[in-house]
Length: 114
Length: 120
Image 1 (cartoon, one colour):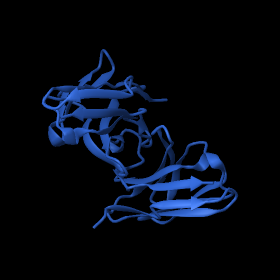
Image 2: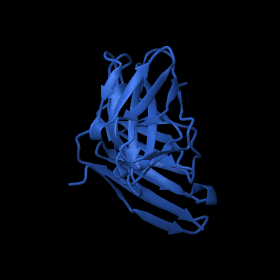
Image 3: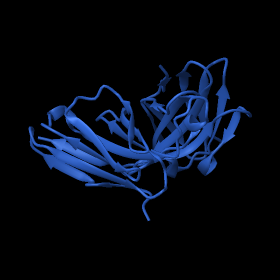
Image 4: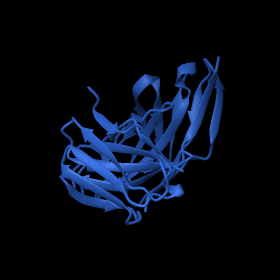
């Protein structure tokens, strides 16, 4: 069965600084990896995904993530954080066979201070 | 137009009651899901339907019964509500196939805004 670990409950960063939200995964076979963001009282919104190919994936709102197979990681990054980036971020993994069963991590709250 | 809409947005009820949450998507997707988000924000899949057929049932109590009258709708009925059922329930949809080896696992889910259920 696949699983995702987000080791940080919360990440604090000052506006304008780079941010990283960590994610490691476990899945048999090749993974499909995703980042979703949840703003207060809203549903999850898709940010970016990795299927195959280039390890650096670019997504919405200036976010990017780097797939590292040897470290089984898919950390989310942004060069310069905005206060409006403050939200709950979920990493998720799916496998490339069988029915889609997207498994989410426990979420990391990102707080960007002015 | 809302892509995935859920009703009601808020639901407060007493233990032992029966309640339903409705979900509709206008994206033309063929796969729909129910996820449960608990008070710690942990998100867990409950059910998945593809073209009105149940695909995933994640050891959810029998008190929870999903119904998909057509591929654009997936409703969730809960019998004999318990305190532990209090959570936010999210409906989602995707264009996902069911064939092993296809790329359906890479498909993006579109989520509704959630239905917050409070059982007193």
